[in-house]
Length: 401
Image (tube, rainbow, N blue to C red):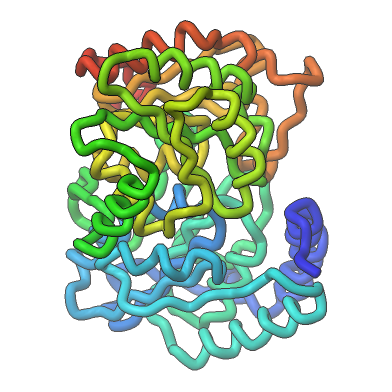
């Protein structure tokens, strides 16, 4: 039986805090010794940690690439959840992957965590860069690795045991890529600005996407508008109403040469399929029919993406696909596009944003329903999508550096 996300959050918050408290005597160097500086090590083995979110891993690609440029002879390993293993193949700077499978009972997961900690300890890492925002498990991993230098985020709102001996503030008014890169700077990266980055795909990914489109009857000259109606299970409240997406798809399908294509993971097929069915005969449903590589190949073929604030948006940002994104519970300052090829719709109500990384992204809506998203009309989204297809610039919500 797979563990629920709520249970994992509860365990990390309460059990994780207890474990980190009990381990404090072993962390005496933090309180009484000299804290190391990045100049104290010449890392030969680096571990990067990010368990949750393919979108966040994609946005961290610039930082991992910068670490590779700074330490060209080092081996860079990446620790993530087992479901993200195949995605790491598109990050060329990563040499090896360690994964944790949590899709089972709590006792098996605890056993796997223990084995993982022993494995990481034997690797004798010199440097750990913990990209997780504020989980206790990643702080435990950082400490248990035995690495001399351990870099991670710090905030007074969330105690992580002081197991990172180089602590970097997380600024919720900075874009997440800038926060990730700040960790890289603390880990020795010299450049002030992140390097260019794109997920590396090849012929196989393009061919998979092309085959799916051919099977669906899509002509080569049609302009594809991809539509992502879902959001990660961490916060389903980020979903714009399903009937609004169907309305936008019907509107776009009336345009000459434009074809709406719905995307989604295999676990989302029922939800996505219902929306696609309501969108009319010209809508294509590819949910559950593409691998993550095939999806990236589809991005290379598409003209635009209409999406909620979730992983497919972040993938599009790394690949240069223009987007129309819908924000409500979260702020586009943190996760939105950073250039004018993209259009962001955000009502900016007094209660928004109501989720953040310091509270495990739990949404507590004062209205009981997402008025922030419901207030964005289908006509507005369709108009913004047409503007995107015409190449008209959108608004950047990122704060200036």
